[in-house]
Every structure is written in structure tokens, then in C-alpha cells.
Image 1 (cartoon, helix red, strand yellow):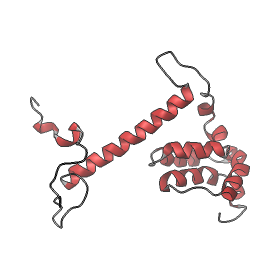
Image 2 (cartoon, helix red, strand yellow):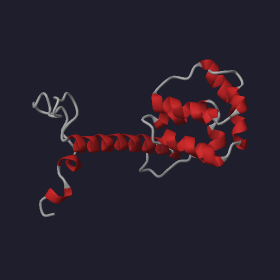
Image 3 (cartoon, one colour):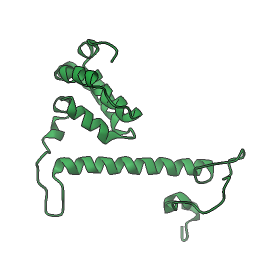
Image 4 (spheres, helix red, strand yellow):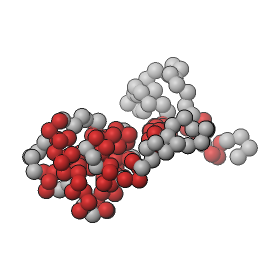
Length: 164
């Protein structure tokens, strides 16, 4: 933690610490978490645009669910996303195995995984092949079989699809 009063001077740091942890994958130490917890009620005074910017970055990070867990652990969710907490215990139809809160979090996790897969797909298209060891010319060093097959959307361009 930079200083003991940093969170009190700008309560947005409560959300920012969750965003940074979800983007960069670090753990928040106990002193920082406690400072964030005590500053969380001050988020009411922070401009909604600033909070939205941090939440948006957190939700598109590699670990958005981790960011939500941190927000909840420091008490910030009740201030910045009270609707999310209200989903706890809301039962859904018999087609769902989770309550509305857990379903929402699971959907977020799956969406994040789809985003990662799409980025990987785009990267493969731009580089001309699968990731991994490449020679100086960008060709695969080992032309052996792929460990996992590419999704169909990565292997066939729209102009080359049969019947298209």
C-alpha cells in the first residue's frame, strides 16, 4: 500500500485495487484490503463515470470474476453494484441449477473465456497460424499436429466457405 490515507483521499482506489488485481493477477495484502474496506462507503461521493471506467476495465480483464470477488470482500459491491447483490438467493426455473447471482457470475466467466478464445483466434489469423514456437519468418518451427484443433471460425474465412 502506498500510504494509509490513500483510500480515504480517493475512495475510487477501492474499485481500482480490484480492477488492477483482476488485470494483473496479483493478490491484495491484508493491510490494503482493510484500507479499501474502510474507504468503500465513501464511493457514494465518487462520480459515476469514474466508477464505470474502472468497472468496465475490470469486466474485460483476464479475471473479471476475481475482480467481483474482491469488490465484494471489501464491501464495494454494495455501493457500486447493489443490483448484483440483490440477485443472491433469487431462484430461477427448474432449468437452472444456480440462483440468479451465481448464474450471472458464471455467465461472466464464460463470456471472459469466449473473449480470450476470440483474441487467440484473431491473433492466429494475423500471424498466419497457431501460436507457439516460430522461426524468424513467422512459420511454425514444429509442423507436427496441433494439441487442440482450431475452432472452425478460425480456420475458414467467410469467402472460402463452401456455398458462400
